[in-house]
Length: 624
Image (cartoon, rainbow, N blue to C red; front, side, top):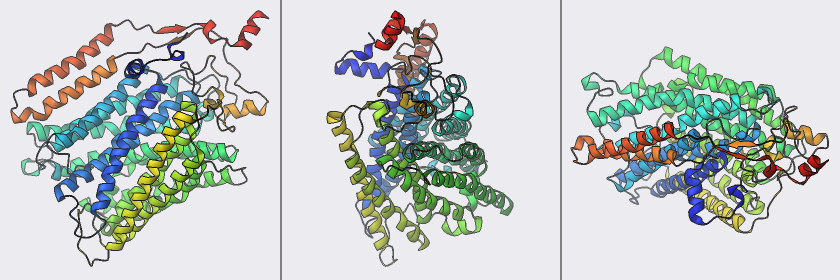
């Protein structure tokens, strides 16, 4: 029998997850780690809103506020939103294309552990002399003059974490290109798989510029070079270019999978094929392409000149077109559909007006002359959060409710889900809608307090009350997860009864091998096509046979741990700390020793034999 069918103690389960290369378990690791960092970033956001609830507040000091502000943005973007989406990509995409695993299971595990150790390293800065304090963009003119080691934690932590994300993106590209089931052409792939594909391509091209920028800043901070030091011939604006060449595609790395999640939900709960599938695919690709042509709209006020500003303003306006195509297609999908307002569907419907507001303010900011007025005001904070929270976070919550039964075999409580939805949605709009007006009234962002009698008091108080509503919604979701895990009823493979894509064609949760026989895909919405012909499961594309699976490995954990250890040595190197060089060497030995072990271990994997896969129907067929 497979090891998964046997009950295990806590130690065995822990070892199982530390060594797993199964994409479904790695998905759970991503969601647990991303969820933890999401709560951490949320606590930091609450501290920000408590500090700004009233004028002249001294809840935290100015220096600590800068650290909280920097860590909130960095944590939410790099350590919460990205890994939560990567978790759902891991859990769902291989199932949607009819694959048994990802192309490189070992690399998949390595990607997770690199992200995790990078995130832990960054957050250890709180306990080791202070967190980074130059904003989540860490502009060089501020970062190079920041005292203490906070920025060094930022630079080293994000480099480790970023390598993990980069190799994860490459793995997803290889999986989608090479491992689709027979009949699964590109134009039959579900929208979530398409958005995973395009987002992974963006990761491949966007993360290297960030890595280069972080490396140059590391050399400036730790080894005394002058890439970003104007007095020594460097240029601080180069950091902005490198950061935003990554930073703007990053927005689409986050929002495209969110679009894919909502596309699946609209089709499922409208009980209707997604309207304009081909145009949705081309719009997704076009958004990915245009995402690399707009980075300097973050830099309109740096003095690039009217020609550069005009070019980037026009490109920014252009990206609204494919996004508009998607909005109309979602509306037309619902039009005439037999709609079912489950918790995921509520999130999907609420997403449309929320995200449109973020898009409209984005077009306003994309106008270079107007941006001179909006820039560095709370208007930008409101816009950014309407895109990220109104798009990405709503999508993460929707996906959590939608795919939870597929991942864990139990459906989250719908009543509690709707309580979470209304608390979070009301809190979200209370928090950020008013911030547009605070910005237009002149309130600058990143200020730790404000004086009375500017007309900002009521707006800030409303914003802080809204944050409390959002926090309450998240607490209800956590309670829902716990109570469902203890008491929830088990569900069938097609948990919602209206599944259209391949993940709903197998049991919930899926077996370790996903499909005992690879399915034959005969059209878009492959499982729905079979159901319309009166079949309860997919037509197999191959006879029943042995399945080869990869072995678990502790080496991804060790390779990542080695980089984590070495980073502490780099951190203190210029201080002349006696142990810094030995720590760097020990970390390097752990990492490269583990890589060497990987190269000599003969990892043939193991076989699940045909007899173990046979159910009663299969045995009857053999006997006949």
